[in-house]
Amino acid sequence: MSADPYAYLKWPRLIVFNLNGALSIVATGLAAQSLVNLNHDKATLAKTIPGAKLHVGNVIAATALMTASAGIASIYTAVLGAAITLKWYKMETRRTIRIREALMVAMATLLLVSAIIATVIIVPRSAGASSPTLPEQVILRLIIASGKSIKYRDSLAFDSLIVVWICFGTTLLSFFLAALTSRHIGKYGPEDTTVGHYVSKHRGTVVPGQGVAHGDHATEKKMEQTHLETI
Image (cartoon, rainbow, N blue to C red; front, top):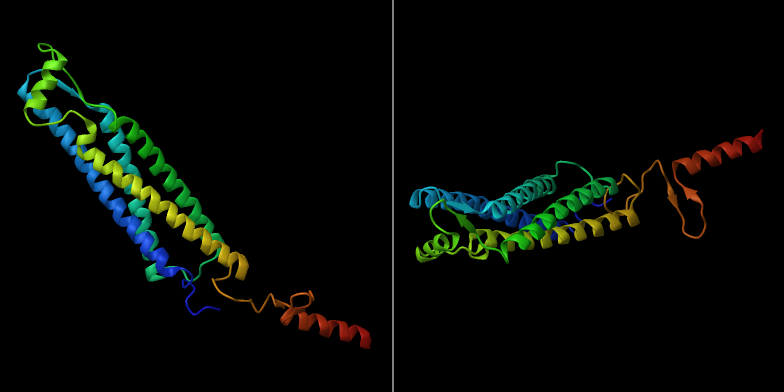
């Protein structure tokens, strides 16, 4: 058995997991700050033009979804990286890898959905405005004249969107490495054994091409057969 049950692709997995975690944290921070900025812009417009409203509900919803998905991804990768680094569990099995793969698929799906929704909203659209006393176009021109852009892609939400897409890519890479590890375990070890060429003393070994078991069970079976022949 390998001296380190985490040895197979350990460092590539750790590097990608930590990179994914860092990107997730950055995406969470950018999306959260974007929400703060949007709410601040709404409050500023209401103070500047009494009764005026800045309509950015769609981008707020998309940014909130990105914040949630990136936050979940950052928590998951932090726990996973710590588990591998600190060796919280003693063996890497196909079962643990499958659970990890399922979680990665769920996380990647959440990131993908949030990124697609945010892309549809942020890239082509702009903010709207309304007021009981002024037309929308006048309000928007006043906003632009103050040095601010009404296009969502000029806001911090667009930067967050880019990082979320990158985070989705690193999540897929993490899944690929986990799948390689699972295949390695499936090739060299049974369902609940660690990575490496390990054969349980209770299972015995099988000689290729002969189909003959050698080990404790094989020895016991041979002794029983000899005893019967003697009788």
